Length: 387
Image (cartoon, rainbow, N blue to C red; front, side):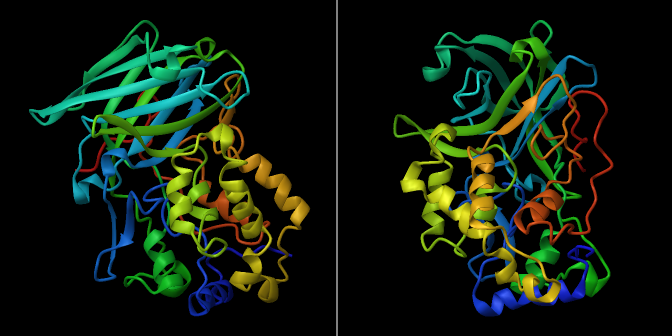
């Protein structure tokens, strides 16, 4: 049987039924944009479609791990502060931006790359990037300078040794028909999916985001299998607090929903605070339980079981997948090119199609939107910002 895509009108009708039933289907925001109530939401106080971030400077959009333009080099990137050309936003002076790397398989950081920013001046911010290893990662002690620069001009970036660093505004590399999806499924806004209005709109195509990119030799990362995730922390009342966290795209967005969890809002916020090494067991296994419940019910909720004969995962299959999806980190072998969803993530990887296929057991396979055309072949790889 040919699996349907979201361009199929019958599937759209079935998905729309979810709204009437009061369910909460998957993928209502971006990969990790606005993934938890503490960070923002899709609507304003009047209920109009207005994706906004309450604390954009600490809101992670996406994390990427892929081979550089030369073999034996790896790129680590993280984007924050969604839609800054609509809502504005700098890097936070009181925020630490961290890309964590585990090199020994225990899902605890062995290396941390940390960006810190100064005040805005002449249209940019000065920044430094420090590298922490071993015992230094726990309290961020004994770091070594990895690079520095000014966000107003990429040419000011200076990497130490064989490292390249970047921080500044770039075009958002993520792609997804967000307005069409929420318009058709939730009735929010005026847009619809392509099957209804013959127009697949990539909501992120003209948006900018803040980006942090570092490229290092593979040997610096251990030369083999690694796990990578991004975190932000912000300082308030004399203490550092957890801001946001993500590894693979859309884990918090897709699985911690009111479809399976009556306390989904609190669970989403908690997911951004719990360390990856504890995610399988935290909150009495709530994160794992939510994944299993979603995977064993989503086609029934969407109506795709009846419309297309699609089957949800068995409980045993869902448990096995939950052990892969948690902890929420990007796994990657630095000797290879990125080949998502389970070996790195490059900007052009269609994570929405992969997430749809994975979650629905191969039933729903596309949102009809393709990768952007502005990615660069060389550092910093993410497209130049839109004017």
